[in-house]
Length: 495
Image 1: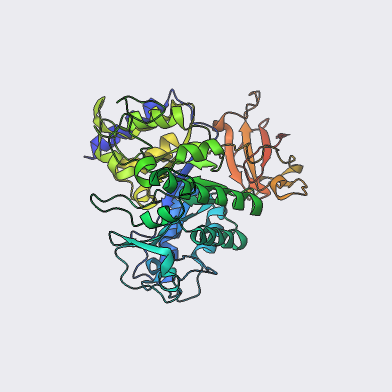
Image 2: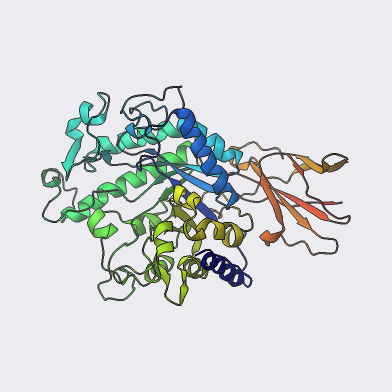
């Protein structure tokens, strides 16, 4: 078995020898709470576990964490509106024993490691099947008229305007109290359908159809209104915060049986028809800033082929930065159709990187990446994430670069070596402030090419950096990055 794994790594390395990693790429990982990984642990133990995960994820090049903080109308942060989550303490409404605020901690820990931190919320789920008791301050108790039950789930009724307003209040509360880089939602909009069980919302449609001739269009509009309102709220409150969605991997099944604008050559649950989530419309309206479809199936899956779906999202939903949601455990269990000695990781990555609109990946899930099945994490670290990456640009939010670093100089010390230092450029607006800096290195006589990530030594929020051993004549280049990773003009320093 060890020989097979070694051959896998070698084959991945050889395949990457003719491919260059991109300078800009979203490299995310989901950290969920609903898997129960916190239950039975003290806050100290949870912090240690998460810290170890973050360290390992940083080592394999992950540059964004999507941290689940609202699973069922609850909170893994100090919420002004909702009770503490049972997924954190075991009892809904019970605060962590030492007053810990997981979201504040996660933001600080991510930023310390030069990662983004996106707060991941579920907008509609009020109670999961496994929750047997809710806090007296929960919406299910305080506002039962706003909730409906479906197959054991309790759902904030998307038809009720107060629920839309309430969700916006929850997000605004996060924005006001936490320095998050993004607000993120996954695939749970209207509940996944159960055969023979209709949604209990006919009376709401009959009472106010709002001009829609079908209840299906009316449901989609209910969700559209929430997405629109959240987009407007985020832009008006903190315009640099990114708003992203991770929809189910199939938008619609193609009516023609082949990939077309209306749908993909698939046969599965659909965002548009079953979950009433019109992700394509949201992208066209500019209401979301990034899109991570969960393409968790493998190459060759009959009903939902990874290759078919990646091509479809690239071709028909690339109007906003597009990242691919990867299922690690399923990927390493699948056999590459063109290489029976390999699992599917290499084939999937090579495929998505060949497509013009795909600008990154997100790993489902963080702990699986850390556990390294099939050497998945090792291959990320050694091959696909072997060089640092800036975040993809979002010029539709802001395209103005910050000023360049000031007062750049170098000092050589006997004990530590050469240390370069600089001052951040001045800025009046938050969007123009330099938040991080990129350090490049070029050998004597080598042409300075900032588009090649092989030359990046570090991305850092500090204003000094200790260089590794460098030869005389080396050129160091420093640039500044704002919150959206617009990059300044370079400053060169010849050693």
